Image 1: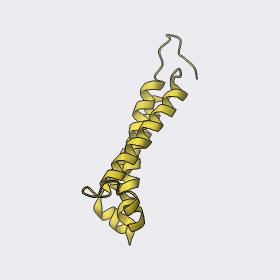
Image 2: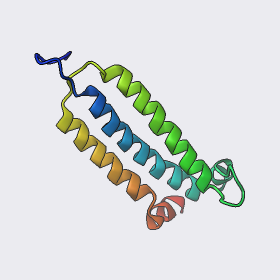
Image 3: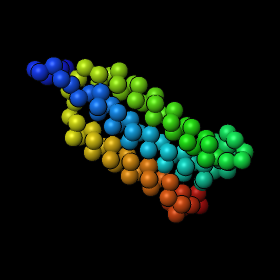
Length: 110
């Protein structure tokens, strides 16, 4: 749907919220990947004194920023179902948190 009758749209706000969820989900993904696979852990090690945390954080920020740019471009002049997209973003934040939880990535790595 394009703009509403009053000229106000919520697409840009929804893009910011959803991309935040995508960024959190990607942090959980990269955390699980880096901890459950030695090869991935080495690839994500961008700076030796810190270890693979650098790659996890940097890659998550890159995913967040790219997703925000894409969603903002797609939704900038649109009215979207904000509640539905916020609910999805909350699910992604929860899954991202789960991916950073040591018992979870230890279980996946077995």
